[in-house]
Amino acid sequence: MKKLSTVFAVIGLVTLLFAIPAQADLIYSTGMDANSNGIDDYFTVNGGPAYLVTSIAAGWPVLPDPSKTTGKYISWAADQSNATQGGVLGQLYTYSFNFNWAGSTTSTTFDFRWLSDDYLYNILLNGTSLGINNLGQPSPWTTSYSQNGVNGTVQSGVNTIEFLIWNTGGQQPPYYGISGPTGFAADFTVHGNATVPEPASLLLLGMGLAGLAFWRKR
Image (cartoon, rainbow, N blue to C red):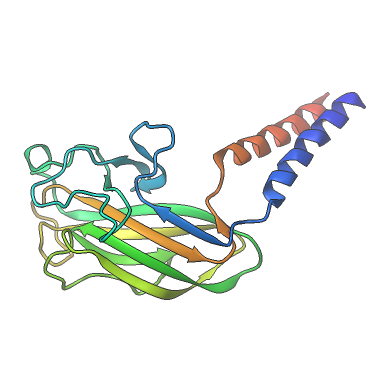
């Protein structure tokens, strides 16, 4: 009975963590790095780490710049200078971010500010286009773009925002020739009951379930 009580105590703790009310709005800027390892805490690029850019390409603005965005540049590598990344071929990069939504599936609004090298091709929410891009603009990587009050449908639990960035060397996408360095910086707000999923909470949930499985075997 003591082992059973311990297991349920752990699961109860996990349940309490997930039951804590979510903050009213989720506000996030790219480049957050709580443990100072040079990797964005929550973004990925094409499924891999999103590195904070430390060596920038010629012509990039210095970020963060609150007049453009509070975000820092992130990319698939920390070094995005012309000298080291000048031979990179053009391709589509997916910058992905997950957040939790408390409550049922519903419509809400999003605010975005971003700089992209090169073009923001689309923003997807759970695979559905939000209809946002800066295609056709002459300087996507030096001018900040913004879109406010964007409507989107969120689902209960984990949601995914994907920023699709074409690296094109200034050409209109799609483009697969020599393109050079690339990066993305943004800040955005999700209005409503949303939070970034806590890795510690997810770990505790796994521990609780593992403990229950162990007790069952005994």
